[in-house]
Image (tube, rainbow, N blue to C red; front, side, top):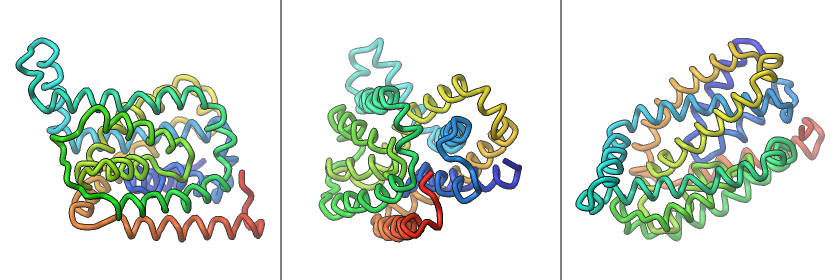
Length: 278
């Protein structure tokens, strides 16, 4: 990998991480087009690690909300009165909602890093999950808001988030769809998707850094990995700011249409052997 490719992949990660179009799916497609073996350990580790750039950007962008929630949670540990604060319940809801993807990710790690990296899975997931997003977008009443979020909501959303381990489904697309079907408004589910991403993606990045350190060193290289991570941070910050403004006034229709077009194009390329699945 060279620096130009690292910058390109970092930019793709930053743009797509929080849009409901699957960052892993886009990175997998881009990595294949650049000529990489997409199920090689260093490539799968690289893909996971650079996601932390966009997550750190989100943490900084939403720092006021995060500080408010963390402070409320800490106060609630020592004060019964503080446990009446909606942010105390919201904090616990986020913690519980973050657990399922960690458990499922560890149990099915081998399949996630090998079998599910096939571009056939990416193409199918892009198209099929678009149907779920369309249904959620149209069925949602959006009558509930951030103060109404419960542990039951986030646990359900957290379980659905685990489906995003299949490249092409999209972590944000999964969590947002599940949240809408719980009748939460779009801004609430979008921010909740951001909050749930922080422990899940940072943990995945840390695990890959520790377990695949040597593979990264002998493969794509740590300089390129850190460059891509830095670019994903900068681009991701801008993407988060834009998405929150966009979602406040628009539905997911444009993302759904894009997913269907990309998935269909990818299937044509695979069916005609223009590219190989791995």
